[in-house]
Length: 242
Image (cartoon, rainbow, N blue to C red; front, side, top):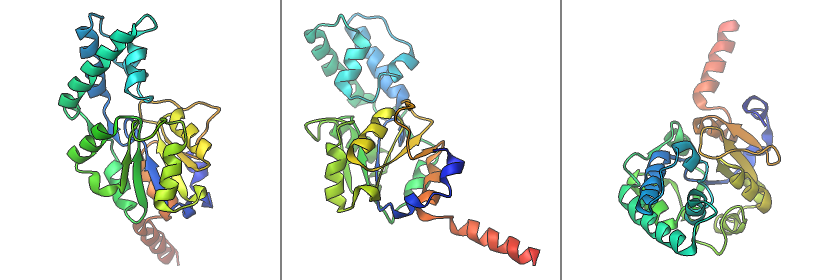
């Protein structure tokens, strides 16, 4: 559903909790991920890849990223060595260039009255360290990563866990992400889904979100209603017209 079409939709007024994807949704981590992957490829004797190609491999967890970047001919030993090197390199450089996307802090500030969590396929310790390093930990009651459960997104186990954590119904929880993986996760768990257009992932036509935004700063007005300053401006216009 488009931004304009969704603005008058009342389904989002019942949202009590939100689960946010991390890479490509809350944080712009593209350059640090790409440089870490190319450093790993160089370590293994492979040529570097274009930044956009590596970015297209992000979202399914570290192991899948390594396998995609190395290609089908990679051996198990090469994948294992690559994973170790990538994690070591990324651990040292994961905050070199990574920042929250525009509108993220405004969104989280405006939604403080709601229960919020991070649900990502990135390893949980890396996720927690990045969130802490960006001074964003206070927004989230839970941070779950790709190794927090037996299965990763789009398996719904993470959202099922958050439904119990927050004690809310599926229709009261919204998954927010930048890729079809996030939307599929929401569909598998029966929750609402919000997609963003600026991230690393892609939205597939067969998995349309309930809401699609170009900036997370717009999300609170769909959930909270129109901001107070908008209401004041509307009242001022009505008064002037009289």
